[in-house]
Length: 129
Image (cartoon, rainbow, N blue to C red; front, side, top):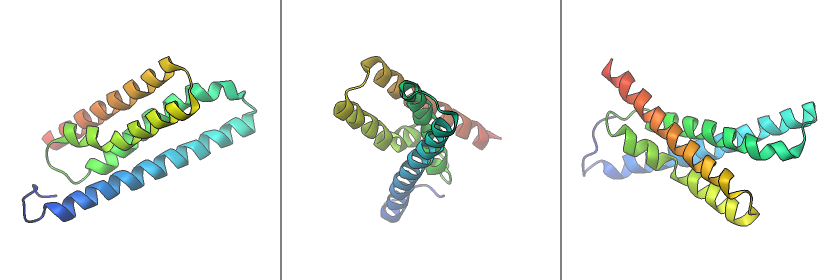
């Protein structure tokens, strides 16, 4: 994608936001379905679902960052962090409603941000080659 100019900013930003929303919803739902199926088939105790939710958040962060930043030429770090904001808001709201372990919410938020940073680094390294 070309650089953002004032005359073509609206469609580009709208496309970016739509990528973020759709990739967030699809990745979270798809990963939850997969891990729910695994829990059901292997008859795993539900107390481990809190720990699996950290994995789901981290993998969703990678998927969202990679899909939303594809096509841009620069500012990967900012775009990756902005792309995981809806996921962060979802995790915080989920914590407020369910009231799970506070340490676990900090681990989830940290994993989301770290995975977004890693995706930004990987994308910027790919562009340098």
